[in-house]
Length: 195
Image (cartoon, rainbow, N blue to C red; front, side, top):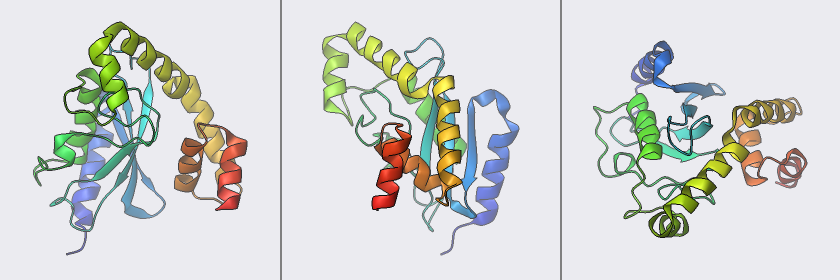
């Protein structure tokens, strides 16, 4: 069964219309199956002031199977892998329903940032820190937000993505290479040229 393009386009329009939600989405290339979500860090959390990017891949079976999502922006959180951005969230797995939407999923990620679930972790090291020293966890999460998700960093990231894209690489390739290189543009180019 092919992807329901009409539904995906409607979901994207709904997200674009709701500016107050703090989430946006953009299409990568010319495929509605590859998207980049963007969400603002929730207020009064260590993620406040951060801008977080999420890679979104839609299977042909969407909305009957959940979107595949992972954080591109590095995040210090018990339910998000600090190594590869994988997310542990029930609605992205067995609790997904076709009644849910991309906006629901992005808002759920925003809520997850506000309410970590250390008893069901994706990153055991972060979960242990959260449970043993909440103040240390909050300090580290805030530091990571300032380092990887601060608005100035995001503007810098966009400039790096644009520079790499101008060399003939796709935006998605550029983002992935920069993620692997922790934002180092030179190292990202080495990854791309060596690939």
